[in-house]
Image (tube, rainbow over all chains, first blue to last red; front, top):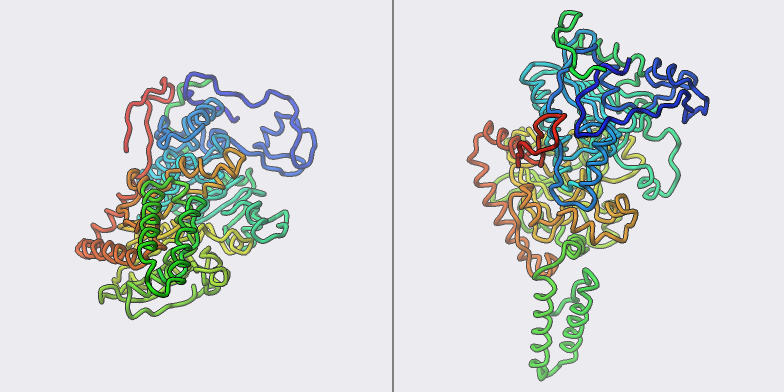
Length: 291
Length: 335
């Protein structure tokens, strides 16, 4: 598993593979875990349940039905509109590191046969930050959902707005939220899934506008950064501050769902809200670049 | 000059401030009126200096002007531009946020709803109003006020002046992000005309939460930014003292933002900044609001909402390459 969605690469360099080690040390429980076992377990530590961060490609692979993905706007990317010091180099580095053109992948596909438009942000790409391109792709995805009368599912993982694009990034909060508003007006379901971490501008826009908001266990979710808050209130915050569980307890999200349960849970919600159903065997051709 | 001169905005202002103090001193000592020529000469020098300093202020200088503690604040605009002002309170969910003010009032005799960040002019006022940094209940109160405007078909006039949403533990617990996101979404489709004036600091999401509108006006020396220059420098360059460089890089001045298509009009300020002549500022804001309000009143509601959507829809700079595996040639660029 975790390899059907091998896409043509952005740029000329090979996509960097995961570190080739056989054993991984869990950052939380410090146990050595057999890499294959970790992968079989969807990158969740079998000992302590720690959810490793996933790339956007990995997220789509474990969420969608096999070979059921039609990507939108794969080559759409931000420019350096302000000529911001170091931004061009950072963009190039992120593209090389992830093999993606930008910090979000959008498209449509099926989840257990239920058709949906889907987006997954990639924290590996400049911290999943939202600049013009991420905003544009999320907006187009929401607009396409309206045009095709499909639900929208967004997996967020982002540090917030991309400051190298200045106010253009801030305005993506307005653009994406307005598009989500139109989707709500059209009576279509929008499921927002917050993964580790979902913070800043992304929380202050589309991530918190879901009809149902789900989160992965332990995910960091919040608007302001912990350090800034601690400086403001002059005391230490508890360890569980701004976690998914903390948000659930405060009534900010609907449910915390383990990665293993996420796909069936999203499928159930899509079914409940009346997503269109396709035949169990998808008709879409397999992606070309299959190893 | 009979009042105490305003406090200096930046070190650059220091010389000017000293000169102004000297004018006051000389004038106070001048009983007979015999030193009028000397005073006139000093004033002429001060005027020259002002012009020199302010004709072409740097972005960093503009940041300091935007933060000038004596800039006209929301209560000043309320008092000078509106009549029949009735403040309303509370979000009906949790509390009443003094950092965000909501009021009913008349502009040119017509009923409007006013919302805005409520900054003070001294430390005491600012502490009482949390420096104009709202909590979620502030944004929810603003939304309640805007819904009221929508119900009666009144326009909304929003005054933006905040360093940002309050970064507190309780703000997070009560859903700061949700409150901001909700406001942004609802303002994008509120069935009343919305006019926004950025009067001082437009600090990121905390500003945008009341700044989505049909016309966004901005005072000449106000700033609007995704992050404070100091914060940006600290994160990107690990050096908070490089605020000056970040201020230039972020393109946060009114002129820059007009060029980027983010604001609709720059409202000129008096030489030296809004705090030097508040009456002049009231005049340009009154005039700007009046013109845009008149134009917006004539727009049918459906057209208004489509236009508002399109206004934000086109903001951003992206390119699409020929194919994902292509060599990165720019095939299409949209503004």
